[in-house]
Every structure is written in structure tokens, then in C-alpha cells.
Length: 114
Length: 113
Image (cartoon, rainbow over all chains, first blue to last red; front, side, top):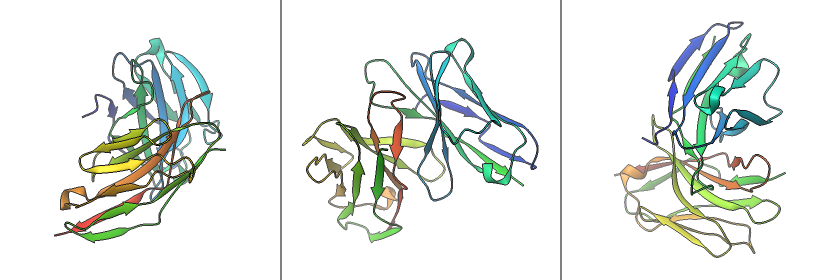
């Protein structure tokens, strides 16, 4: 257990529906990242927050994706009008404090779009 | 941009065999290098890291040496166990900007008793 939690762990939805995932970070970590991992591939960066500010977004993050981190605590990732290509594992990671090189990952939310 | 290339998997070995998983990278500057492991049904866990050239990271019997001249960070273990069966990811972190991790595609390792 890394101290980073994600909910739900699994989500099955129909194409066109909206879904929202939540990440609860290690409390003292000020940086929070979202990655996406498709089957047989390594995680790919989507976006990150420094406290409540979203500072960078990948080209992978289309207009249907939005992420928030109100008050610099938990974060949500919403996907609108889901497509089958959105099926993947969505990973949250945080880091901060003394060891700035190490990121701690949550268990992920596995999304299946039917 | 920065990238990481891992050896193709899957890799299947017998218990107590010697393990090498190759990893090479392309990056500007002086990245930090990592190996993460993903056990079945679990999240990514940091296995070991090295932050500068010639550093050796080690943990749980695994080792990897940061070789700048060959831009490599190969993972090795002298005697693998069934419990080492997992997916292993090589990654780099290059500071600046987002300070995001860039991952290789992963190598699935299966150890047979």
C-alpha cells in the first residue's frame, strides 16, 4: 500500500456515457499526476497538478477529458462521451517532500467502455 | 522527446535462473532512471532507482547500473524466485517542466518452479 488510493477500482460503462474517477493522494505530497496505461503498454502521462494548479496537459488529453484538484487535495478525472478507445487503466501518482524523484502510484481504475 | 525502450517480452525462466531485462533510453541532459514492478492485481511499485551516471540501484536482490556511455539501465537478479513473476517497467524522469515519468512498454516475467 503506497498511501495513494483510487476509486472506483473498476468501471464498466456504455459508449457515450460520462465517467469520473477519484484519486486521494498522500497528504503531504503537493504534486499529483494522472497516467493512462493500455494493455501491454507502459503508463503514459496525461496531466499533473502542483497543489490545485493544473500545470501541464498531454496531447493525449482530448477535450472530452477534464481533471480537477480542488484545494490541492484529492483529484478527479472526468471523461465525457466515452469511446471504446478510452478503455484503459487510469493511474494516479503523487510525489513531494524530501524525495522529489520518486512517484507513488495508486492501484488504478480500470475502465471498460462497451 | 525522451523515450525508453525495453527488451521484448514475455520472459519465462526457471526458479534460480539468472535474470537480465534490457533497458535503453534516449534523453537530453541527465535523467534519473527507475525500475517499477507491477504484481498481478496490484499498482506500480518502485523497485529501484539511480539518479546519476555509474550509480547502482538495488533492492530485493535486483540491481541496475546507470550507464551513461551506453544509455542503459539493465535490470539483473542472480537467482529469481516464483514470487518475482510480474511486469517490470523501466522509466526515466528528466526534471524541468512536468517532471513526468516516461515509461518503457514493460516486460512480463514468469518464473516457473
